Length: 194
View 1 (cartoon, rainbow, N blue to C red):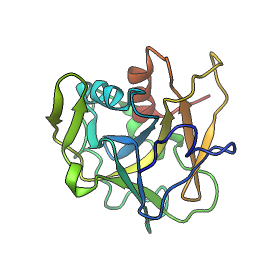
View 2: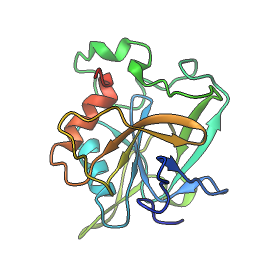
View 3: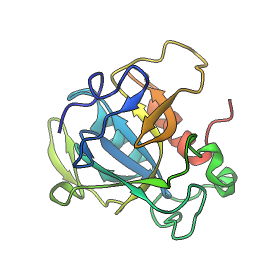
């Protein structure tokens, strides 16, 4: 697995996915909606995932995420695992709205599903502590990508996008952002409106 962040993301914001389908990244799930966290070693991928898990998200995979196309069309929630894979709803009425603005642009070849390679499933690295066990989601549908190698220069940024396996997804530039974890969780719950 090559380090992600810089080299694996092209100038056109396109994630280069190797033939194995496994990228050096971390992924978390909130009720069937997944965030793929990219960045070089030591950038805070596992730390961000641990914060999100502390607030109800579930680990999908740490340090390696398998990406695959699912034949289910985007927006089709048949077989969706919402309600099985996150914390309590906490009155998040926005979660009931279809996909909450997360439909990727481009051709509709189906969803991108994230899973853990078998050897690392249910484990997350905590620097200074070691490998920790985690109750993990078996899979999650990719809805947004976080890049911890780049800082967001704008207070209210444009809606950035990244292409993953031919689909366009929201891209959050997260390096040095102290409030990233709670903001991402809210984005996973309810999407972004502007």
